[in-house]
Length: 268
Image (cartoon, rainbow, N blue to C red; front, side):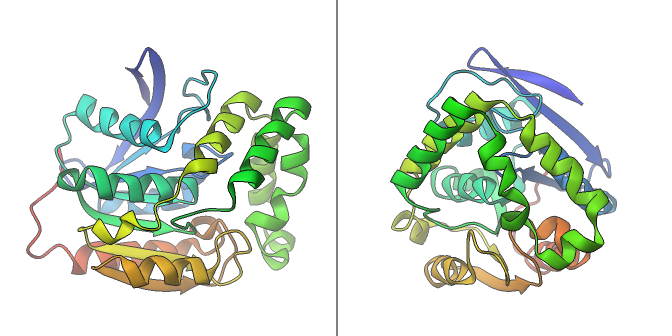
């Protein structure tokens, strides 16, 4: 685990997995960190896993915002440049999925495959994100953290997996309010509904069948417009990579394997 300097700020990352294998970038959701991808460590036998903390999160710097989606996307590109990674596959969930869409549109030569999980081309409304940012800046993370359990997981999963849910909620309670709010500012104006038609990479769109935040209808919208897309549902709420980890991992292995033929080899 290490850090790089991007625009005079630190970006924290971890590169693990099978040496010399294709690189898979994993981009976290709002209010989490690279550690949310722990269930995907099992993929390390197939790929090099490049996990990082999005600006404003985890161990990355948390400068005063607002941030922009372009800035978050450029952070990911700077990380690849720093590590000498010419091409990679990219998997992002929720906010990370929006970053993935931006990268697929603006840096198509860098990404061989996209996995867009529990996300949308337009998440929520501008006013909703503005209000959330204002609340967090005024009151801290508690108002957001208190409602996260029901947004992130189904009641059945929470009841059976309290030990997995608790650390995520504790981390959200302790998250940096300004970093979180600054990402809300980016989401407030992030609207890729027209631009996703220009994504060229093979794309897997993953929805949680019980997701109240980015719904299966949002996934349908993306899949209908991204030319080379495949669409699946998993029995989960918003953090499907955790709640349906085994199915999530199997879907990624199948997608990346079946779509590799004819693609330029990717990696370091």
